Amino acid sequence: MYRRSIALVVGFLFIVVGLSGQGLRANTLSRQIAVLLGSPQLRGSQVGICLAEMGPTGIEPIYEHNADLPLMPGSNGKLLTTSTAFAKLGARAVIKTRLYRVGHSLVIVGGGDPALGDPVLCQRAGWKVTQVFHDWAAQLKKLGISSVHNIYIDDSIFNHHLFNNKWPTPASQRLDWYEAEVGGLNFAMNCVQWAPQINANGALGVSLIPATSYTPVSIDAQRGPSQSVWLWRPPGTNDLSLRGTVNSSTNYYMQVTIHDPGLYTGAVFRHVLRESGIPVAGHVIRKTLAKAASDASPRLVAVYQTPLVDILHRANTDSINLMAECLCKLLGHLATGQPGSWSNGDAAIMAYLKSIGINLQLVHMVDGSGLSHHDHIAPSVLVEVLAHDLTLRHARVFVDSLCRPGHGTLIYRFRGSPAAAHIRAKDGHITGASTLSGYLWDHHRTFIFSVMVNHYIGNVNGWEDKVIDDLYRDYH
Picture 1 (tube, helix red, strand yellow):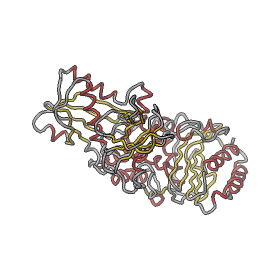
Picture 2: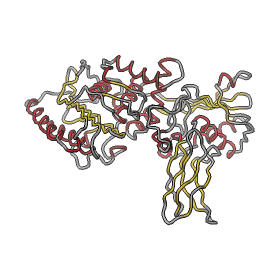
Picture 3: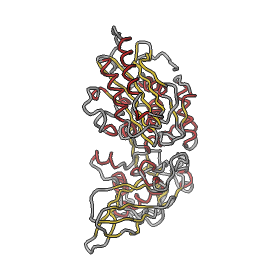
Picture 4: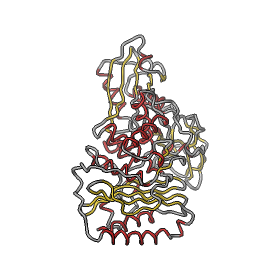
């Protein structure tokens, strides 16, 4: 396992003190994990474990099993992307979306923000998902703008390869939020929320949030004795159809992805402007600010900004793929000055890893979230990256973006475990991969762990939790 000395400069961490009997405890832990490795669930599987402690001169290994074996990380891949973004952008960074006026038209310039109109962040703020657009409409009215010709969309900060061809590609899976397209201008997680409705006359319908003509819905469902209903759209279109059987109206909203998030954003903005009494005579058109302003000087009307810390939290606690994928492409844009892509984004992440001493032979990423089965990371790499994160300025901001047991994707993990209150971690799951990496604090000591399992039987969440429970008990 490749190791470096790391200076501990994080104020909130406790000073590590040596304890007698550490070798005995390590031997006990090894025996306990050996028993766990004999589980029938792991028959034919690949398991990698790296458990370490932050010592006065760097990482001190406690236990390793295939620590340098690159395995599919699932959403643990987000840790490389978010760590790089945090190191490169800083704890106080924001990502901006700008609105310009050019003649009688408007231009929305995307900055790669994945959180514009994010339903969860909006709910926390007490907003509708379209609140930003309503605020922009009010600002336009203050400026005396009573009508608009075209709405131009400038999402050129990223390339227009919106879907990663290394992701799982069944058409039905592309409709799920976790495979949302990735653009330089995004809105509402690039999904529309929907719920089936039975109107007063008994006809079937669909309630959409946000309301927009960008996603027309045809009704191909029927009334039935049970509720089994879904929205379908062919890849590359936004022509939705309601299918299945509807038994009753519901206020429980589900999500379906949309195609072309930039144009979707513009269409929703146009709808809000019209609702606000500002008619839009023209169309929503993709065009850069420079080209849109060829005949008139652009005037900045409004700026919306999302703190990086909110994006990190959504990526690491709630495991939202779009958050990590936008950060990946943004890192590529910042590194090259070219439109962000998965290629230059992953290259930027690898360059950062190399700069902190990571052995790049132990890492291969084709996206920013770990969704692809082509991604592979060794447990030792995740431990080293997490250790380096602790040396960065405002390190606690990053640590607090990770999940606590009982919250986010760990809501059902470590229940009743005495270690639960001492853990900050990121889990990861794709078909054939289950992973858990993070931090464990106890009695002035800081532990870093990565447990990765590929090709297992059933659900190994509880098995992974037992490894960390044993670490906690043996060193508590």
